[in-house]
Image (tube, rainbow, N blue to C red; front, side):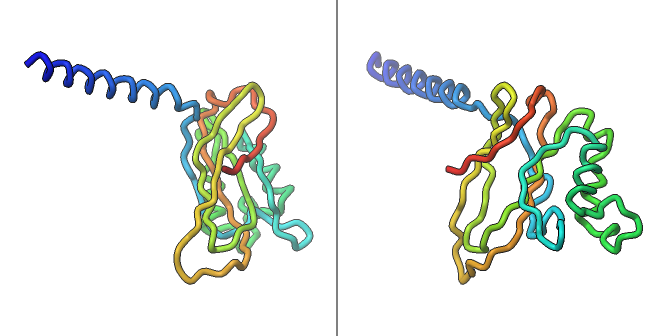
Length: 168
């Protein structure tokens, strides 16, 4: 009977230590993918924009859209009523009260999927930790421009001035 109690005690202790280690190792901050799809964030001089930036106010978003040729706020554009334009306009004062938006536009073939694993923040720099996952199937390596918009709590990145991406 005593041996049985010792085994149960060891199992419980092992589980508790494992849980504490898992909780203690989670240094990332919470995020949500607001949009992910095959579309560039904009064009300048007919060339698709590749970028990694973050914005923390509706005005910053409007300025970035104007700079990158995104017509989300241009009512005269044929793209104004499109799904991505509507999504971008949904990032309003209420959204930016508590959140920032990370915009990542990049080139990748269909064979490799980009996954965002975590986001970390150290002093003034936001780091987006990502990886590539090989996709199965009859896929080409033809490159497309992808866009991922990541929603992050503003309090978790207060004081941020730079952003980078790291691939595993």
